Length: 237
Image 1 (spheres, rainbow, N blue to C red):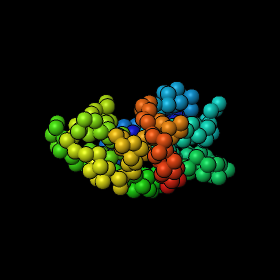
Image 2 (image 1 turned 135 degrees about the vertical axis):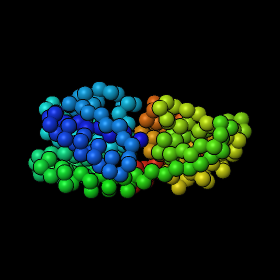
Image 3 (image 1 turned 90 degrees about the vertical axis):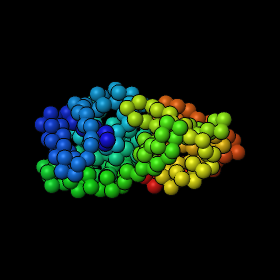
């Protein structure tokens, strides 16, 4: 399920983008949930832990809080959200680079440009899945939805985001789990924690701050190495 937000103060373009995205998803048999917002304020009023979308389409020329200001706030919370800037003018292109925007779409060419834009985003995100045999049964998990794994009393607990946070249990060492997940952007921040860097907002004061509001400890001996790995990962996005 792709979570997509459209933020534009013109109802015509909000609805137009929604219809184009629905047509794209239907043609490719993709599952997506699209939410519409009439202003930057309405989008940000959800709170930092609630504005985790896979893709956000932002109109640049909105009144009061423009799209670039909203994009900067998104980047404060989530480094891996794909941001697409939408506008009727060409004079903001360079500003888009400052917020690591994936694309810059002109409103008069949306029909032609949107499919290529979505193709590029989905190729970059390339949804990956891994299979584990949990005590609850065999599960095929989307790596993007796996927040972290905690080792506790000879078990590994997988914190997984479905319709709500769910924990799956596995009798296996965290070393073994780490070997299976390291290629998907998971980082060992502690002898007991393996974290998906896509869900880390920041690392400071010997703590990893996650986008769901949780805080996990980073020991002093690992801290510098963990912080460098996280900075390198953010740079890759």
